[in-house]
Length: 513
Image 1 (cartoon, rainbow, N blue to C red):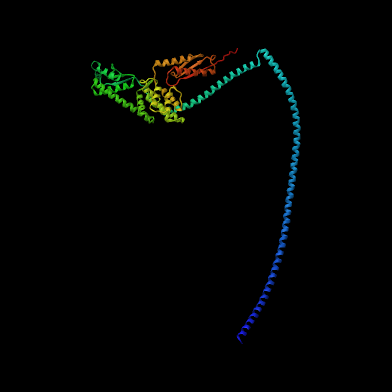
Image 2: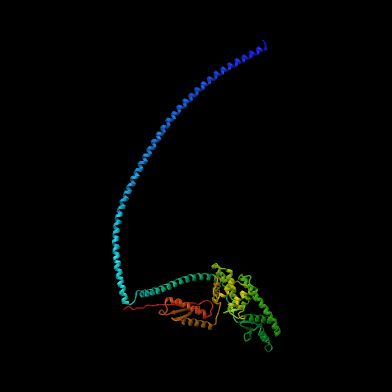
């Protein structure tokens, strides 16, 4: 067989095999398609059957829901209808009530109209009667209505003035009671915190001698030693029969202290002659000056008041040898400073300002015998000169009411000064001055019109005045007390305060028969 034939045969066989395979595959595919279509038809039938079932179930469920909603709606409708019926009944009842009220209002309106007409008629009659009465009163009293009104207004005005005076008196008394109570508490606390001792100063000093022979040596030949000592110190030496003692007399405490120190040094040294006396006096002056400076520094330190000018500190030390009514001025100033500071702390004021003003309030007394003017004026000038603040200057100037206090601290310095001066034993006066002050108090009180009796009591710190009730009324007692206070402040000098107590008593006596 030739190769070409073999190839052709192979190709024909291959073509026949492919066609046979094709037919076989077609047959197989047609069978698969048939099975698939049958399966799909079965699925479609099953789905249709299930859909029909679901549809029937949904219809049944919807019918049940509709039935339920319908029943609920019917119930709600029944409830609404019953509510509407109830509201209709209430509305009907209210309409009936309103109709009744309307009828009552109409009846009342008619009654009110009748009463209003009656009231107008009565008012017209009353006005006519009032006019007739007014005319009759004017005819009887010979006064017009304006004149009567003026008399009535004057009477009401007097009553109003009286009521106002009574009210003012009550308010003032209550305010004074409360203020006095608060002030007593603060002052008592301040005094308790600052309890100081007091020693009355004298005008003499006593120097002890080792023996009576020393008296002759002090006198010297023809009295030269004693004259030299008296001339150098400015004091008087009293050498009498007092055993082993020499009395130094002088009103200047600084000179008296210089003389005492110099005499003690001379006695210890034993050499007493004019030259030695002058030397010892100079040493004593320097020693006293040192003591003055130390006393001033101690006062500043004790009151915690630093940055005070050194000249003011020296003047403070000089007040150690200055007295007022027997009271040491330096101790008094320290006490006033402490008292003012304590009260300022209680009131919430400036403690340092109050203490500084209290310490310097009497600084003018250190040189008041050298400079003209009152110690207040001198002290204010010194404070300004050495650059103290105006608040401190006001405390100095206002502590005796020479000027008005411009701060709470200035008022506290006033109070502290009065407290320190009023302490028992702080100051002393002679019997003569004491009696004169009492007589002057009673004289001032008796000089006023309407005063029946007056009594100066409590060592002259209170004057009790009894007035004539027919001449002075209750309101007038307030005015009288103020006028007497002003007169006492203007004409008298006194430590502390003087209370003026005006008493009015009215008695009504009748006899039952």
